[in-house]
Length: 361
Ligand code: GLY
Image 1 (cartoon, protein in one colour):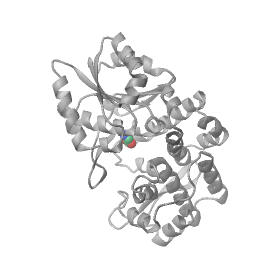
Image 2: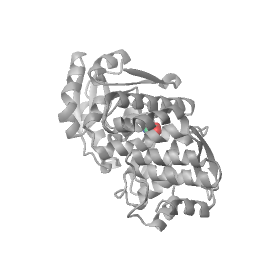
Image 3: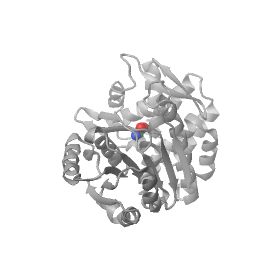
Image 4: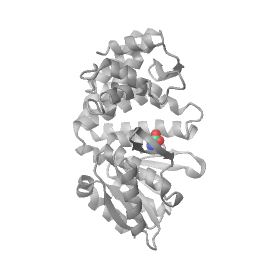
């Protein structure tokens, strides 16, 4: 079991990860003095597969609980779903000391975190992420959001959980495509911060894809530690430190949006975005041909796409203007200058972006 701290003064919390840690949830919550009644937001699959373990762990420590099931699609990240949950919690919350449990992947984590941040101007909540992407990324950091018609994640808050509990056993039943797409974010951490993790991924990619428990435990804890460190130093993205987490995201988001969020899922698009970003780095002379090759090979070995297919080139270029990293007319890219090293550059000429994207078609 690994124990990592996100250090944020009064808002500090721990990330506990390992095989079987769900069984320890009740004991952890007792120590936290978080309340007595758990409002668990999840989906029907997770409830039927792991609900019993969760219930037992809570019951053993005297907690009461109820489950709120939501559909496991991006559509659940909406103001209307938030309103439904708020009205349901209000009915449940009679003479109780409520806390919210986000038991699921990124959609449930964001929805539950956002709801917790506004119910009674802030109700304690914890994250129990069940996908690799949520365990290495979205459950940590306190950004919560729902989507608006006009775009993804447009209504949101910063609201930190009181605990993140990542049980590796959840990952054993993860569909291969979801596992692979999350590996894009894992590779991202290695490229932005950790050459040792990069070498580990090079050596162990086969075992990771085969869901070897030891490897999964290692990468979840390592990525969580990197994110915890960055968030601890720049909680609200005011110092520009969190910006490096957007490596691959400028063009990645554009590819995801241009494919109407259907052709490529988030991780696959981020993998392609990282390749484009590395192409720009190479053209600017920031990244050596050897390092570029190693990144390309690792992305391919993870099973991520290396070419953009079935998405219109012009649509991607148009979509990239809407990226939130655009400040006025200036674009902003996180560029690798080695393995484990990135820099932030503004005003990358459009011709260079077009050239790097063209190479991925
Ligand atoms: N909740 C994800 C983040 O804060 O980055």
